[in-house]
Image 1 (spheres, rainbow, N blue to C red):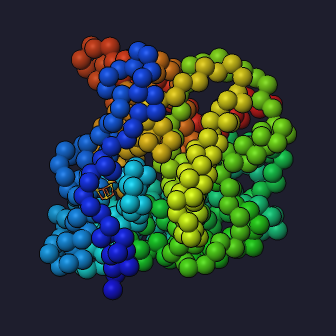
Image 2: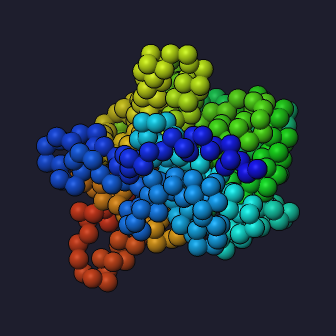
Image 3: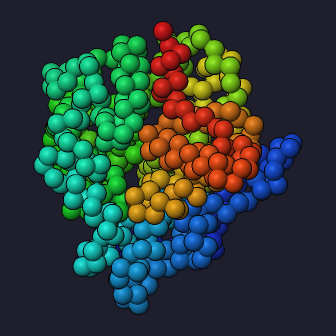
Length: 436
Ligand code: SF4
Ligand code: SF4
């Protein structure tokens, strides 16, 4: 039996209403808002890019059902369609039947691969690299270089706190890792980093390669088990440890986990941290799917699973979710001088950056198109800076801005209205610059 079989009853709740294809504008009546951003907007990155039903979640739910009934035979073609999804979770947020759409999509991917279909070429490549003893990361970089960026404590297992850097921070966005390390120092958190750290497994799990995922999960759990707290700067790693490790291992985590922004949030709201330096720019904020919507949905699920009165507790769950979505905004509002402008699709309705779920690796055009749509929305607010807090979002947004600039050069057109001049900034990096 595949793990998808365990989700059969949940999948059967899909009535194909297609409400999950849309996001809702936070401010449909905002003066001057482009008509494009009012009311309901088609907001599934896969469905938007490919334009037909199989690529929207509603189609995927029916593919899962047909697969379970034996009406749809697993094939490479089917896997191609099922993998063209960023696992952003927008569909899960919209579904009034509380269907765990992302779980079903991920289990459908795993079930297709378990049935003997090869993972897609580039997904297989990252799975193989993560297994190679001298790599253990999807970027093909040497394992021995994992902590080369760091000039503080390394491999000190007597420490109580470890910073789990993740592959993107360690090898591709070292600025994020360095600024996180600097912030932790400024906040008085003593920590170490481990050279033997291996990929958290997020891209492996999302692309259906469950055996490899379980191997890296078990290694990480063993390696970090004696720490009290693990801190993160990567949205994907944080989500994977917090939500997937307990689910896939069947055990609670042996340590606490926190995103660095959470530590800052707690200190700010307790009045122990004050940012004095101003940042006099027009800024908008992108909610990374993994730290914002995915954790919000997990908070909601936890409350409802324990509930014997859904009517009452669904309101409590919605409130708890909203409080989670407000946290990064509280941190942003604590920065003086900033002109903060929300985008139209925010919080649970936020539109994805386009990189997650193995999409940037396997479907770069879809990743770029999605990022450009989000950047255009950011530019429509009049912001000069697009702030976010996920190394993967930062990479994809920067690549999209580069592609806009290239298009400007080639066509001679001014594309600033759709975001070619937007500055992409990591919130942790900004905080580090503003904290003395
Ligand atoms: S997943 Fe939920 S919102 Fe989407 S089509 Fe099915 S029932 Fe409707
Ligand atoms: S998770 Fe995101 S990309 Fe995937 S089907 Fe749902 S809305 Fe579309």
